[in-house]
View 1 (cartoon, helix red, strand yellow):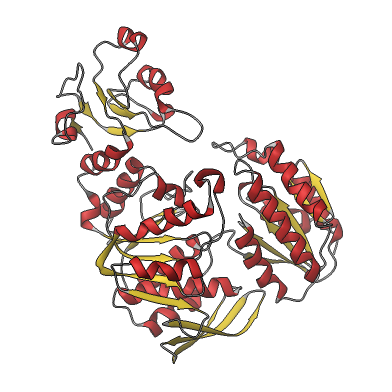
View 2 (cartoon, rainbow, N blue to C red):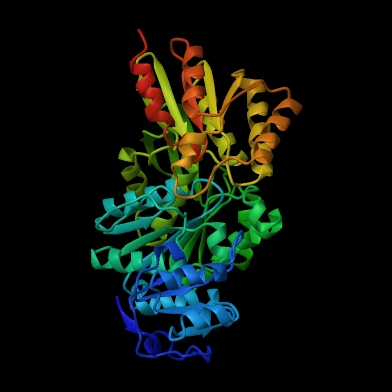
Length: 494
């Protein structure tokens, strides 16, 4: 898409168009100077670790057609690039969503939007809702941490929720390719940074809230407030799915303007699940609506936390007019996305892999694994670039579960080589490693730490007994774990 600077900024107050040629053509809006191409508008945003203003020279050298920044150019920049239009605004982020929507001709107006937020379970819930809607014959696209679908070339994104230019470009392409429903996984970072400003969601789900991203938000209270801010983006004629089992989320109903459906295991929830049986590769449960049985289903998905994710998706579908029983039954052939308690058999062994990222997700996975009643070997990838607290709490979680499941030593890895290949820096910092090890020592949890993922997996495989479960936990540092473990086990003598 293309437009002129005058079209892009029309009516957006006076933003000091210094030396601006209002006829300059803008093809794209970019916030990362490394991605700038000729005819792009570069928006210099302040960040957690760096200020985009420092990257303006690089963006201009790449051919940026114009710059939007919080302050005037330096003398050196103006001397080197005297003719480049420069727009100033005290907070460029306040304009970014509107500019992106304008550039792509307000693509959100042509589709129905849905949002899923929470500490854990967001990705799985998005996949489940998409599965339900597609069973109903509704063309559906989505953006999640795991995958972006509904466009010509699906891909795994670098961000859970994209910056506004990428988000509106995705909405435009997905809509042009026929999507009528688009589901967005919305992170607390995205809410704090107003990435979804200007959007209205027909439905939204809040899965759960436990402490996370405190390095960014500063406190749990601020984190909860960021999550709660999603309420303002939901249409009053739409619907909310709130986890009744979560005290923080249940309280959101008091300020909600959209109709609320509570879901949970609690009998006071509107949409309730009663789990009948479960195993390493299934969960059988009964769905009740306002205490009346609606359906009994068997999902090829383990874990009570995934039943809660299913309830959230069903509740969202119900707000769209879908029948609860039909929505539930459609999940019987649902397959979890990769690394969401992904389970495979490798000869005499079971390998389970989950992108566990905080105490809440470690607890959820361990509850599911505890039901299997098999010998357990645990490999965990420390979480890099997310602070000491989350790694400390993960060690505490493993120590607590070891008391019941007796799987120590934990085989931990920094996954140095694997993380070096990623475009984003997720390497484990020394303070993160120290926090994990100190917490493990404090709780008397035996840990063997390896610099490389392959080393940790070799040590784990050496400990496997016939019938054992090899549990692989962690975010990016464990992404290759399942493939490596399967390859190693295929070479192991039977």
